[in-house]
Image 1 (cartoon, rainbow, N blue to C red):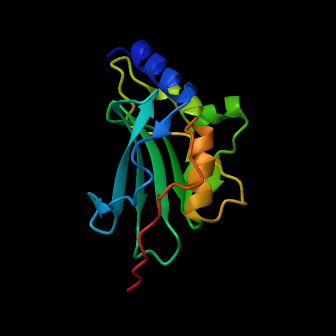
Image 2: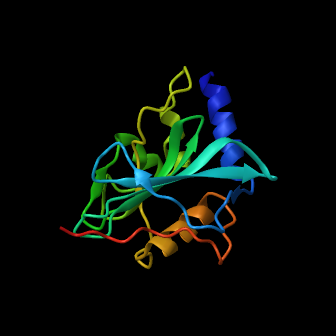
Length: 171
């Protein structure tokens, strides 16, 4: 897939209203690549049709602070990601000056597609999301982060969804 066709596809996916499949039932968290993490992958539906895009949540149940990520995956590529880590941070590329974003973001942040799509290669690959910006301080729980992220990505999330973090297992 070319750069132009991938960017066009992701722009279209993110702009269109979407739903998540099967969220009326509790999600089954699975071990992730990192043995300290658990993840869920929820299919994204557009007009009732699933075409392979996913919302993925990754959780670190043994972290001393509440730590998780929520991301959108299109064609097996993460195109936007919220990192909820109060002790984390991110150094942005020099190109953030065009967006009025600070060079360093501390704490919880989001990697928006709009400020990262310029890094898609000619072959339609996006190696990593280079730029991030802080999320509102009022977001303090998984549910509030999920609702805000879904709103930012045009995903309709009903109030009665069953997406919850598994219990934390501090050691």
